[in-house]
Amino acid sequence: MKAMNYRGPFRVRVSEKPIPGIQHPEDAIVKVTHSCICGSDLHLYHGLVPDTRVGSTFGHEFVGIVEEIGPEVTELRVGDRVLVPFNIACGKCAFCKQELYGNCHESNPSATAVGGIFGYSHTAGGFDGGQAEYVRVPYANFGPTVIPEGMHVEDALLLTDVVPTGYQAAEMGGIQEGDTVVVFGAGPVGIMAARCAWLFGAARVIIIDHLEYRLDFARKYARCEAYNFRSLEDVVLFLKKTTDWLGADVCIDAVGGDAAGDTMQTITGRKLMLQAGSATALHWAINSVKKGGIISVVGVYGPTDNLVPIGNVVNKGLTIRANQASVKRLLPRLIDHVMAGRLNPREIITHRFPLSEVADAYRIFSAKLDNCIKPVLLPSAD
Amino acid sequence: MQEENNSYKLIPGWGVDANPDDRPNYPMKKWTGDDHKRINWQRPALQQSSVEVLHSNERPSKSAVYGTTVPPTGLSGQIRRYAFRHSEDKYAHWLPLLLADRVNMVEGVIEDISSGHFPNYFKERGFTADWKYNRGAVIQKVVGAACVLLVWYAMSKTKKKKRFI
Ligand SMILES: NC(=O)c1ccc[n+]([C@@H]2O[C@H](COP(=O)([O-])OP(=O)(O)OC[C@H]3O[C@@H](n4cnc5c(N)ncnc54)[C@H](O)[C@@H]3O)[C@@H](O)[C@H]2O)c1
Ligand SMILES: [Zn+2]
Ligand SMILES: [Zn+2]
Image (cartoon, rainbow over all chains, first blue to last red; front, side, top):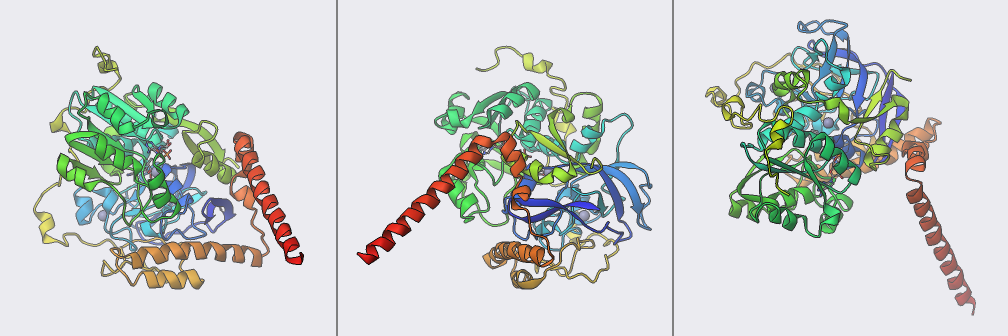
């Protein structure tokens, strides 16, 4: 089969790989029809995540058709069209019992601080991902969800990660009716977080980025205010001023370790890798939220350390909430929102590529070329 | 620029999930008392495989399922094995892994060439896309690199001349 193949930072291609087989009685093999590239893949692509091995296949946002099932799979049938949550979760361990499906203890041997994720380095379990014609899906009784009748396949595709992550970002913000919410990052996740903030009753939603085309898109799609931090002399000061000098009730970090905007952070975090990525957005979030406010972090950082003003967290009495999205927990409610037309995820898809053009697709998404918001790979289009 | 009116309430879905009683208010701990039994679950069937899998020393054994793609090999594999002797708390775990990734990249090129496949750097780096959508920056980079080369060449020439004077 054809599969995306990582060769080192900024280098990917398509190669032949053997079709995966059943390795565990609860495995399924899924023939992938659509597979996204995510902002999280960019951390791998930029070489920031330790134990990203040459020859790996990325991809954790995919939908497809069940091709084969293991002897203990009872919840799926061959031929089912499924959306597959990006987290690999057993559904039984202590953490899954608490609905922490992004923190399963039975899906990643290599690190205890993160659950298994498809195509996300050996630090997240060493699974090959869905940017390929076929993919092995463990715990098929638990994770994969049959795409509901009448749902557009591209909406289903975004329910594997972007929608639950954006929604959970807003949820973790503990938004109360009337709150002012600031979202850092106008990528797919930030835009979705801003859109979902309204569902929780926000009265004002502000998004911050430095790419004009994304800010334009966010204004229309998420119906929020949008500002370019490059044209603000001091983004924290601006946010203070515009919130009666108090700060926002909730700040969301939807950027993570690839953040721009602060030279020191960029050099130490992204160039020299002395930190686990640059923490500019988290830094800004902590400093522009109100005293007693809530910080919600979905932006991804590496496993070592980051420079953030923790003293201000103490002195301002902040609450920090963070996690990998618990996709399976949120799916019932989000399927409802999509079917009722309250959320239109597929409108954020701007690019569709055959798998053979994977290198160009990564480049376009990484360098933010051609007004790209969300790219999709089509493994069967070649 | 504060909203003067309440027009935001017309946004589809506004407030549908606002009721605090109707949301888990994640990540509040879902306390059942059950988790104080610590290992309170029956493990799934354990995946059987002969592929070498490095597991964190912060757990007694592998998780029930795991990936078997690209097992550790060569020099990078040696470095990875060393890294896994240290816990996730230590730089001695993560820094060698990053080093191994860079070594692995060179191994990848050697492997490519020795199997008769010369990697197409331009294609792998998405140069076609850059040329199409980012031509100005590409030209700038090429011209910049050419200038640096020219200056370097000129300097090395003048140095040589001086030696003969
Ligand atoms: N927790 C989870 O479950 C989860 C799931 C998916 C993605 N993520 C993470 O969410 C983040 C965003 O993902 P994405 O797909 O939207 O990525 P993306 O790269 O498309 O978007 C990131 C955006 O942040 C902007 N940005 C950079 N520096 C900034 C700064 N200092 N302030 C404000 N904006 C800044 C960039 O211009 C870009 O538009 C990534 O870190 C990704 O890994 C987390
Ligand atoms: Zn993702
Ligand atoms: Zn589990």
